[in-house]
Image 1 (cartoon, one colour):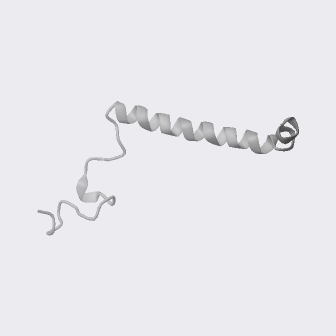
Image 2 (cartoon, rainbow, N blue to C red; image 1 turned 135 degrees about the horizontal axis):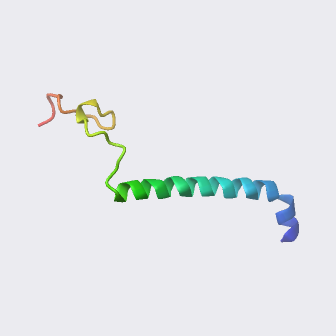
Image 3 (cartoon, rainbow, N blue to C red; image 1 turned 90 degrees about the horizontal axis):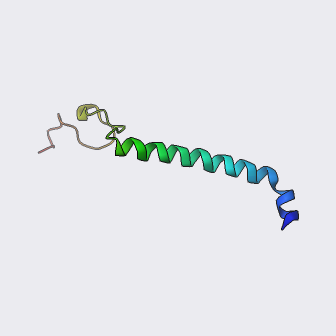
Length: 60
């Protein structure tokens, strides 16, 4: 086991850093969501996240 760790210490450190970065991003997103902040600007006519917009004639 110690030999495995010694042979892969660089990979383990990089993996730990990546996991910490991803965890920080997810935690920030959850915190923002709980505080009512979102990535949505509130202007649906300029939204590229869906197939319909307010000005679309297909939107009933």
